[in-house]
Amino acid sequence: MRALPFLPLLLLVPACTPAPAPAPPRVAPAPPPVVLPAAGLDRVMGRDASALLALFGPPALDTREGPARRLQFRGPACLLDAYLYPPQGGGTPRVTWVDARTLQGGDLDRASCVAALARAR
Image (tube, rainbow, N blue to C red; front, side):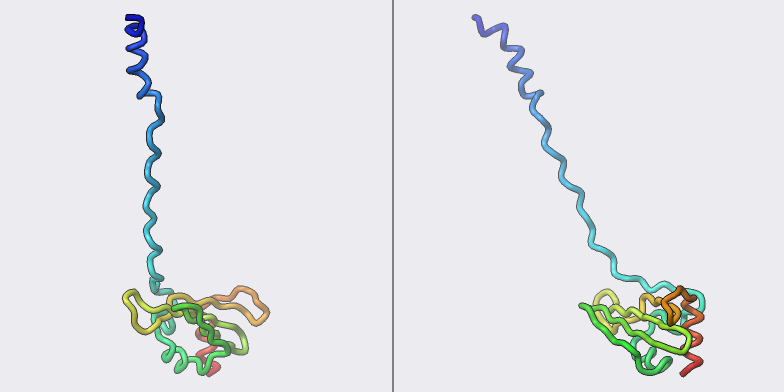
């Protein structure tokens, strides 16, 4: 009979245990690069390597890392790096991004560099 006063306390013990930690949120895989049209860049964006070679001639640099490819074109006024990735599901790599700079490394409008390189060819 002495245990009877402690019986209500025993019923509270399960309420004191910590709740299980919530499952960590699921992280979705990164989406593939998307080709975005940009003013003045329609001559290069979404194009394959052969189209770039026809427009600018042979690249000064051609590097690959995994599925990505970077073609660098140099002209009298600028450097243009074109980044090509295969589309989702495979296929021929296409330009998804371009970066331009002056020969000294300063920022330069990408469309202006594309135009200058095409004229120099």
